[in-house]
Image (cartoon, rainbow, N blue to C red; front, side, top):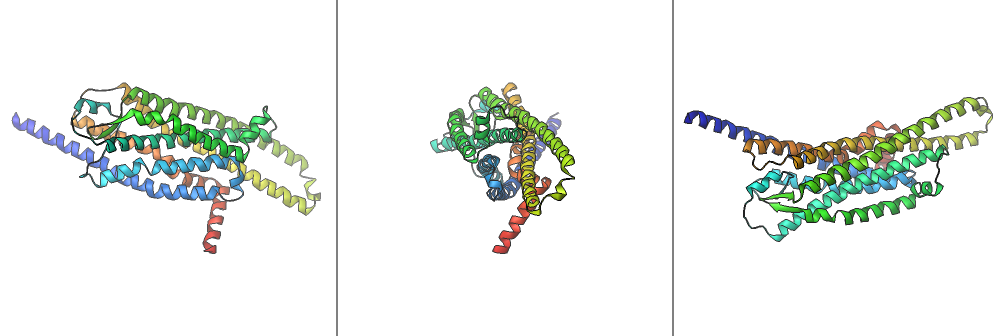
Length: 360
């Protein structure tokens, strides 16, 4: 009987160790990928949208500020996870949402700097992530109003001019950053350190914020305005086809200089269409990547267990790390998805890149 118990204990220890190793190496390779590929992508994305004529588009203002916030998000918690898994012998404060840690609370001394770092790290993460996703909401609103403006369907011209003006878009973006910084202060006070883990003190509040404010509300707005934009784009394309069919016979008699002007307008129209496609693609990617973590946070908040075995803790830690890592998928890989799916932006990016290389 003792031998059977010993064998089971050895098997359980091996299983726990195996899960911990999987979780550790998964975090190392994925965080390393996010930090290298993501930082390069965000830098290229900012430089690309600062080029003419794209930088004059109001939508670019939202995208640029959102990308800067993505850069902050990528260089915060992923760096901590990478270092803590590369050097596990050192004492690190790990971030988790598992409330079962409170049942195994250890009375150990923690410096005030450790607790402050935990609070600041989570504050910066939530501030940058929330601001980024809410800026995408305003970018989708801009695409809708721009498409409505082309169809001459806008009812409130003043509201349209605000969202479709570059200087106004920059003011709105900076205003969102300031408001987001003030609203996110409660995350600073909500997090604390227990047994070397940085966890939220009020899990229900944290889960409600993640599921409602961070996922449900912005995703709903983005989906609604993206759908309305697609409807307007389709109507505009149909009207252009009818106009082209009616004027095709007369176009050959138009002087060459006016035809060139028409081609330039067509190129700008194509850029606007590609920007619309990019925002819609970003809406889908952002919604899918935030959905998994929001559901997991809500599940953890509603299913709190007072005690867990080592096997359960190791298994749920692997699940949490895998789900949490999906949050950084869109900020790190979004630029490459748009680059290889949107033809006009891809050609323009490589043309600008080749010109810069030749200049050097």
